[in-house]
Image (cartoon, rainbow, N blue to C red; front, side):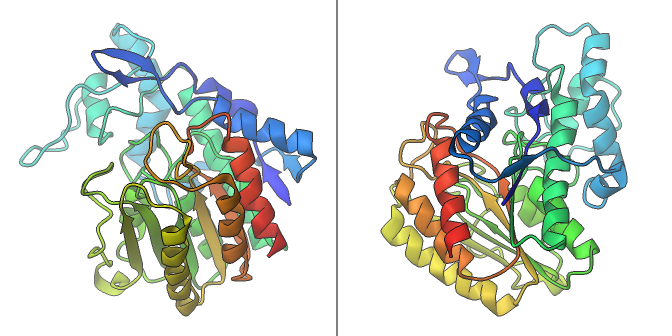
Length: 343
C-alpha cells in the first residue's frame, strides 16, 4: 500500500483554541500526522511517498478562486495590518441579512471566508494547506491507476471546508478534491463515505446538487454536537442530487454494536449506487479514548470497520480527517488499514 505523506504539515503549528476564559493549544496539532508516520515506519507498513505537485486548477474545480487567493495571502495581509497575535482569526461573521462585501480589512476577510473561529491562519499555514491537498490528489492518482488501496495522510484535514469557507480545522476539502479528480479521470460515479465523529458539512455542501458523487456520513447527532447546522437525516440532496446524500446521526455513547449495524446499512446503500471508486474520509475521533468526543469505538473495532468496507471490493482512497488522541491515532489508523487490506 502506498502512503502519501508530507512533512510540510508541521508548518501549520502553534494553533490556539478557546479554553475557558483563555486560549490553549488546539487539538489539531502536528503530532497527529507525525505519530501515524512514525508508527508506520516502525512497523514497516506500506511504502511512504512524497506528494506530487498539482496546479491550482485542480483546486478551483471545487473551491472558488477568490477563496483560494484569500488563503494564499491571509497571513501576509495579517502581518501588514499590524494586528497582534500569532494566530490570524475572525472577529465577525456574515449573518442573515448581511452581505458578502468585498472588505479590504483582513479581520473582515477572515470572517467572510470562515464559518467559525476554530481554523486560524499562522505563518506556515498556506504551505501546509496546499501540501495537504496535494497529498489527497496524489492518492487519487494512485487509485485512478492500478492501486486497490492508497492512504493520504492529510493534515490539516478537510471535510468541513466548502467552496468558499473554512472551519472545523479545515481549509481545503481534501476528500472532495480527490473524488472530483477521480471523476475528472473518467469515473462515472464516486462515493464519499465519511466515518469521522463530526458531520462533513463541507463535503455534503459541495456535492448536494450532484448525482455522480454519493455522500454518506455516520456522525454524532448535530442536535447536540458540532457542526450543529448540517448533518440531519432529512438532508437527502437537491435537484438531480436528491437521494444521493445520506446522513446517519448517532447518539453520544455509540459503540461498535450500534455503529457496525448502521455502517452495514450505509454500505448497502453505497453498493446500490454502484460507484467506480470509494473515497473514505477517515476520522479516528470516534475512538473511545479521544479527549474531544463521545463515541465508544475501540482500537480493535477500527480493524472490523476496515474489513467490512474492504469487502466492497472497490478501488479505495483513504483520506485522513479527525482524530485527537495523539497517543492512539497511529495504532487506530494502522488497525483500520490492516483490516481494509485484509478484506
